[in-house]
Length: 175
Image (cartoon, rainbow, N blue to C red; front, top):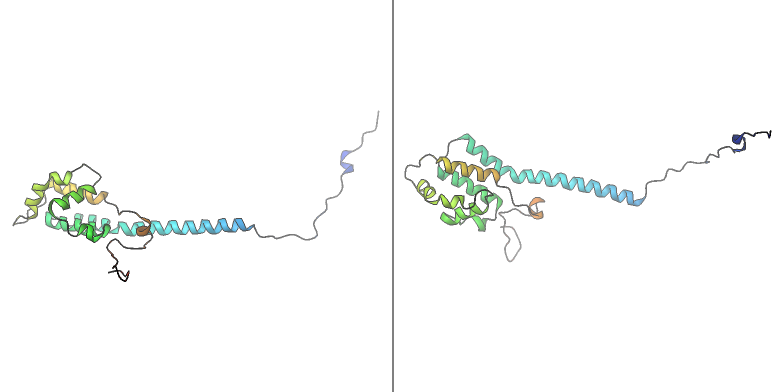
């Protein structure tokens, strides 16, 4: 029988490197890391900014809960809230049916919900003794305030401008 040789006997010793390399990662990994950090920072800033934009709505809801309001007070609260989210020239001059149409256009619920209540709205709004707020109108106003969100654009989200600022035609300054 032929003699069997040990296959491990033919292996050579491991050659260790004389010095160890401590090379930094490739440039692409550094670019990716910086991009991820910037993306995370931008996302955190956008989330914080969105929370800041939603504060007027939260304050309006808190005001509704704190005290019973008549329609004039509720209407004023809704107008202030709309002015904080939409340009002044779009909202400030609205009254009557135009104001109710604006409320309907920004309401995600039933179409023409505010316009349908126009006669009740006008009676309560201009009543001499300022009666308590009608339950249907109160619910509708509260729903409008709850569902209203600031219109999101890159400019509003990243604080490049505020909805109430306008620029003059000559200087480009905020007025």
